[in-house]
Length: 421
Ligand SMILES: *[C@@H]1O[C@H](CO)[C@@H](O)[C@H](O)[C@H]1NC(C)=O
Ligand SMILES: *[C@@H]1O[C@H](CO)[C@@H](O)[C@H](O)[C@H]1NC(C)=O
Ligand SMILES: *[C@@H]1O[C@H](CO)[C@@H](O)[C@H](O)[C@H]1NC(C)=O
Ligand SMILES: *[C@@H]1O[C@H](CO)[C@@H](O)[C@H](O)[C@H]1NC(C)=O
Ligand SMILES: *[C@@H]1O[C@H](CO)[C@@H](O)[C@H](O)[C@H]1NC(C)=O
Ligand SMILES: *[C@@H]1O[C@H](CO)[C@@H](O)[C@H](O)[C@H]1NC(C)=O
Ligand SMILES: *[C@@H]1O[C@H](CO)[C@@H](O)[C@H](O)[C@H]1NC(C)=O
Image (tube, rainbow, N blue to C red; front, side):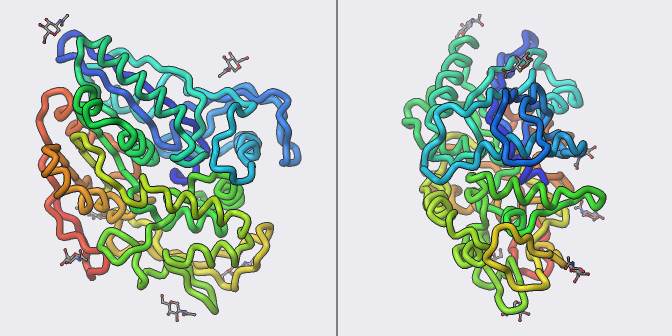
C-alpha cells in the first residue's frame, strides 16, 4: 500500500539542523509519497464522490511506516482530495489547486528515526509546500526552485557546511530529477551526500496491479477499491511502472507481470494493458512520463550517493486475473493470485529496482570521482530505515564513515537469488 498511499501525498521538505556537540549537519529531507503527517484543508471543494465531505480541515492521509488509511472517513476524504487531481493530461502542474497542503511538524519516518536512535539532531523545522507529488517529475519545476533555495539557505545558515539530501521511496526519483537540473559546480559546492532510501529506479510491478484492480494488504478492509481509484488519479504512478529491458535490473520479456486467460502482459505491454482496461485516454500522459529522460536515461546524480534497500521480504511480482479485461474503467477486474518476484525485495519494491542505480552508475560515478554505495538490509520493509540502516546513515553523514558496499550475487532470474551483505 505504501506505493499507492505514497502517491497521495504532497511534497514536503524538512530540515534538520545540527546540534552543538557534533559537527553541524544540515539535512534536507524529502519524503516519499507517504509523509505520514500530511495535512490539508479543503474548503467547499467540488466532489465527484458521493457522501464525501466538502470541507475538510485536517486529514492524516497516511501513516508511514506502515501507511494505513483505516477509518472509512479518511478514505473518503483522501479520495476527495484525489478527485481534485482528476485533470486531463496537460503535461503541466495546475498552478494552484484549491487545496493548501503541508506537513505537520515533521515526517514521522524521520521522527521515529531520530527518537529511536538517540541521534544528535534536536531541531527539526519544517516548511509548508505547495507542490503536488501526484504530478510527474517534469511538472515539478517550482519544487526544484524551492529545494535549491532551501539547500543554499541551509548551507549558509550552517557556516557553509555541505547539505545532506535524505529521502526515501518516491523521494529519490524526485531528488534525482532535481540534481539533473543543477550544474555540477552547484552540486560540488552544496551537497555532501544524497541518501536515497528504498529507491524505485526500475519501477515495480505493484503499481500496475494498483491501476488494474486495486490492491490491499488488509483483508478486512475494502481498500482495493480505494487504491484503484487512487491509482487512476495519480499521474506520477507511471513513473514507477516497471521498466522494460533485458538487464538484470529491469523487467524482461520473460517476466509476466499480469496474466489473464487469453493474454499475458510484460513490462513491454503496458500500452496494450491500458487499452484493454479502457484507459486509452491516459496513454498520452503515460508515454510522456515513461519517456521522461530523468528516469528513462537515469543519468547519475553527480553527488556522493548512498542507497540503502530492503531485501528478503516477499514482494509482489505477477498478478493473475480469472477473466480477460474489459475496456471499461468502471469495471474492476478480479485478481485471483499473486506471485512474488524471484529475487525478493522490501515488500513493495523488488531488489532489482535499487540495483538499477548501481549498475548504471558504478562506472560513470567512479570516473566523476563520486562515491556510490549500495547496501541491503535483510527484512527491511520499504522505506522503513531504522536500526542498522539509520545507524549507517548517521555514521556516514555525521562521522564520514562510509558503509561497506553490499557484496551481492543478485540475479532476478536465478533460482535462489539472495543478495549477500
Ligand atoms: C488548515 O485549517 C486549520 C484550521 O482552520 C488551520 O489552523 C491550518 O493552518 C490550515 N492549514 C493550512 C495548510 O492552510
Ligand atoms: C566556520 O567555519 C570556519 C572554517 O571552517 C571556522 O574557522 C569557524 O570557526 C566556523 N565558525 C563557527 C561559528 O563554527
Ligand atoms: C546478471 O547477473 C548474473 C549473475 O550476477 C550475471 O552472471 C549476468 O552476467 C548478469 N547479466 C546481465 C545482462 O547483466
Ligand atoms: C502466460 O504465461 C504463463 C506463464 O507465466 C503461461 O503458463 C501461460 O500459458 C501464458 N498464457 C498465454 C495466454 O500466453
Ligand atoms: C474472483 O476469483 C475467485 C477465485 O477464482 C473466485 O472465487 C471469486 O468468486 C471471484 N469473484 C468474482 C466477483 O468474480
Ligand atoms: C529471510 O527471511 C526468513 C523468514 O522469512 C528468515 O528466516 C531469514 O533468516 C531471513 N534471512 C536473512 C538473511 O535475514
Ligand atoms: C519498521 O521497523 C521497525 C524497527 O525495526 C519495526 O519494529 C517495524 O515493525 C517495521 N515496520 C514494518 C512495516 O516493517
